Amino acid sequence: MQTLSIINLKGGVAKTTSTANLGACFNMAHILAAVHGEKVLLIDNDKQGNTSKFLNRHDYEHAGMAEIMTERTPDMKKIIQHTDFPGLDVITANMNLLTANLKVMLDQQRPQQTRLKKALQQVSSEYDYCIIDNAPDINISTINALVASNTVMVPITIDDFAIDGLAELKEQISNTKEDLNPDLHFMGCFITQFDRTNEADLQGEEFLKMQDCNLFETHIRRTPKMKPSTFAREPIIEYSARCGASLDYKKLVEEYLKKLSENVTE
Image 1 (cartoon, rainbow, N blue to C red):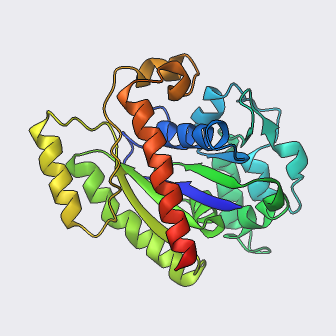
Image 2: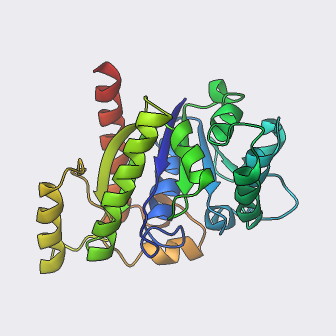
């Protein structure tokens, strides 16, 4: 099972209600399942639970990430839920994850950073891919996600705030790789909400190309179809198959798979 973390420290674009993380995590997961025929596990690792809400699986009765972080032997068969999309399952999150993270930090009896990795080992043979939707901050569940992951991708919009956060995030990824997960690979950044007619976006694109951020060739174009697709609770390739973002997400998945195969063969 290949595990991909998608994360950005910018609170605006990268929150799952926006077109960045929700678009990247859910739409990449859906395309891997629906277009490529893969079995995919999507993990909501954000206490806001927006990915869980999008999939109509958000509640406080069913166990999710909070229980994975706090229980010694979480039952993954009970925690994982099927979605309405064939080939796509989910682990949900809610505000209980905030309390769970605090409990983990106070628990000195068990390792704090490897709990998600250990839990995923129970089901690693049942899925081809796992995509983790992370909160836009660095907390203990985010560290768990990086420790459990093979690769990291960072959605980014063209503005100073996102670029500022990128340096801090890359440092955290590097530290995690050095201290906790030598197999972690920073796959790169990809631009979201891109407008080729906007001079600022074009200048920002050139700036990012000069940075050491492994910029993906595929950019996700700004499209008026993305926001209503989230209200409709539909993947973009089903809501509007011909729109720019739909075509771009398909290309992004293909570029991800190509980079993944190149990284594996290195």
